[in-house]
Length: 433
Image 1: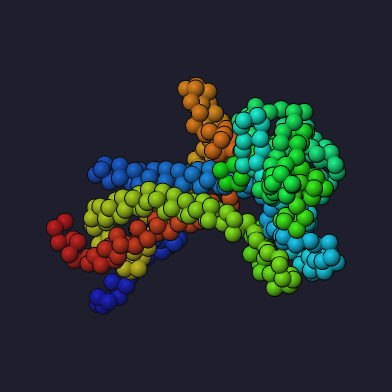
Image 2 (image 1 turned 120 degrees about the vertical axis):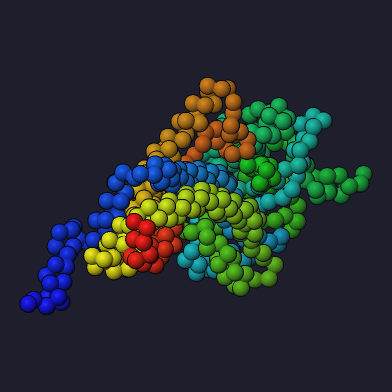
C-alpha cells in the first residue's frame, strides 16, 4: 500500500514548470488583459490610467512653460542689469592699481566695465521725467550688457567724449514724443552757486539712439551718455562711480560680493542682483513650486482611483487567490501580483503622459499663436511678459522628477490592495463558492 504522503507529493501541481517566470508578473499582466465580469472595474482602471497620463502631461507642460518664461525674464533682466556693482562717491583714480589687483584675485569675475552714475530729470518742453543717468565707455559696456543689441535706432558708438549725445529708452521716446537728432535737457539734483543764487546743473544733449527696455517695472528708466560727459554733468566729488562686474556664474554673486567687501578699502560699497531683485526671482521660484504641488494633485487623485480599482479586483479575484494559495503560491506571491498590476497601469499612464506632455509642450507656442490670431485676443501682453508668444523649455530633471513621482504614487497606491490580498485565507475565500 502506497503511503498517502507519497501520493500527495506525486499529485502536487508545480506551477513553476508551466508558467512564465516570474509568476507574479505573468499573472499580474494576465489580470490586466483579462475580460472582467464587472465592467465598472474596467472603466475605473481606464480612468485611473488616463488620469495619471493627463496629470503627467499637464504638469510637464506647465513646468515647461514656466521654465520658458523664467528664461525669458532672466535673459531680458540680465541684458541690462549688472550682476555685481562696486561703487563709491570718492575719486577712484588713485585707487586704480589696488582695485585692479583685487579684481584679478577673484577668479569668479569674468569682465568689468567702468561707469559714472547719477540721478537727473529729462526735460522736453513742459514735460519732465525722472531718469537714471549712466555714463559709460561703449567699448567696455558691450562686454557686460546687451545694450548694443537692444538699439532700435542709432548706434552705441555715438557716445564719444565731449559729444554730449544721449541714448534714451523707447518708453521715454514714446512718452515725450522724441526721436533721434532732437535736443533734450538733462538736469541734475546738484546746484551751481552763482552771484544770482543757486541754479540746478543741466546740459543740453542730442538724442543719438533709442533702445528697447520693456522691463521698466523692475528697473528705473536709464539714459546713457559717455563717461567724460557724465564727469562734466555731475559735480566732482558728488557723483557715484565704480565698476559693473560680469561673473562666470550669476548664482555666485553673493559669494563675490562678500569677498569684495572684505578686501575693498573704506568708502566702497558692493551690491549685486540678489539684493536688488532677489525677492522677485525667489517669487518666481516659489510660483513654480506651488504650481507643481497643485498640479501634482491630479496625479494623486488618479492614484486614489487606482486604489479603489485594485480593491475591487481583489474582491473579484478572491476565488482565484484561494486556488493559487492551495496550489502552493505564497502570500508574498499574491501580494506581488497586485503590486505589479497597479504599477504596470501607473507606468503605462506615466509613459502616455510623458509622450503627450512632450508633444503638447513642443507645439504649445503654435497653438497659442493660432488661438490669438483666430479670436483676435492677446493672451500674452508684451509689456508684461517681454514676448508676444508662449515660451516653453523642457528641462531633463523636470521630466525625470515628474515621471518618478507618478510611478512612485502608482506603486504606493498598489500597496494597500496588495496587503488586503496578502491577508486573504483560502478557506474563508472558498466558503461560499
